[in-house]
Figure 1: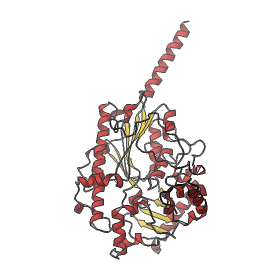
Figure 2: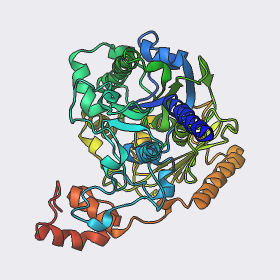
Figure 3: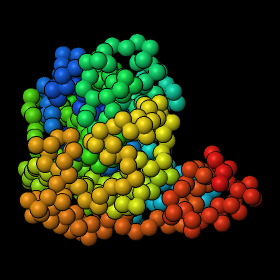
Figure 4: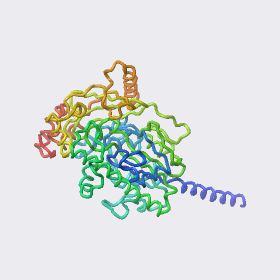
Amino acid sequence: MLSRLCLLLAAVVCSASMALAADSRPNILWIVLEDQDPLYGCYGDAINVGQTPNVDGLADRGVRFDRAYVACPVCSPCRSSLMTGGMQTTLGIHNHRSSRDTNKVPEAAIHLPEGVKTLPELFREAGYETFNEGKDDYNFMYKRGDLYSIQLPKKQKANRYSPWREAKSDAPFFGQIQLIGGKYTHLRKRLKEHPVVDPESVEVPPYHADIPIMREQFAVQEESGRYADQEAGEILSRLKEDGLLDNTVVFYFSDHGMPTSVRHKQFCYEQGVRVPLIIAGPGIPEGVVNNDLVSGLDISATTVALAGMKQPGWFEGQNLFGDSYKPREFVIGARDRCDYTIDRIRTVRTDRFRYIKNFLTDRPYMQPQYRDNFDFVQAEREYYEAGKMNEDQARFWSDERPSEELYDMEADPYQLNNLADDPAYAAELKKHRDILNRWITETDDKGQYPEDPAGLLAVMALWGNHCVNPEYEKVQEQFKAGVKAGKFKPRNKK
């Protein structure tokens, strides 16, 4: 009897210890910005030095990564890679806004490979509460209820910056809060009404036309850093108010660069894929600046590691704080179809060079896109057509582009001098070309295969006569039949 009582007591103690261990696991919070460069004082942004105290303070009590690069300079492929821990091109979720409107073309639905799960699903299995305040934007089929244990009310205001308060248990949480960042369509009007940054004070990159409307656009982007800082401050304040700050690891990063069209968002230049990344919280070194090459895939790997979880086999990143961590020799970036615009670009970033491979040289950089409706894009196009641009500015608006680009990032941070045809850099060109070709083979880069007809038809069903690339010709008759039958009601018929 005594022996049985001892066993029962031991079981109770063990159970209590396990519960304590579970409760001591850190919360993990991703603060994810849309469309934003590292426009913060801690990153040395001249205009915002001293103007972003909350983000700067977060960097002071954590690690600031100066060379962090996302897997794609487009929203949904990047977010799809972050949510799965695998490169979007490896998993076949690389085309922007795939698996949308599948009620019209069910065959276009993309499912993750068997056994592959999202981070929220992994965290739920580990006993975490999960949530996402804001958009998902993933290129695969999923049910929100499977990913997030906390179902947040739409357009909520009270807990917009503290969604963990909606939890029904005391379990630790893995959550995301999406911030507006530099999203042009949402932000510009708000900041134009109450401007803070003088457009004359900003630096316009030499590949842009230095005209008033572009100065205004870059001023708005600088202001977006200050606005994001205020939002971050509100989130951190609420964590502290709820007694959670000391047990919450905060990741602060963007999905890609700013939306200024040329060489930023949607493109594989430095300004399109380099993002702010700060990690702070329990167990994280304080006041550290890391200059290693870091991939967005490492964000996912580090996230599961900090929760004490084993990294799944399909993950392609590494734990940035793990004992086995090794600095990367290169980081890969990729861009494929973006809405109705079909393209394929790959990039390799090494310590000193950036290599870009343009697979579809038969089409211009500035193919038709939704950005064409932006006034600053229209202004630059008019400037180009009037013959007012210099060589560096006009290059990106021409009808031609090279197959390969190679830039010395130390000597040429704006990537203006393409060294691909310079014999003195033939060895570097071959080195980077070989890295990319080997990666394409080893990961079975799905971008090397044409998009299936169902996927193309789904795009046409939504966008209609915006779809001008030759790839759409193979589904023209199906599209026309669908429109005639009333099945498809695109934004513009063809």
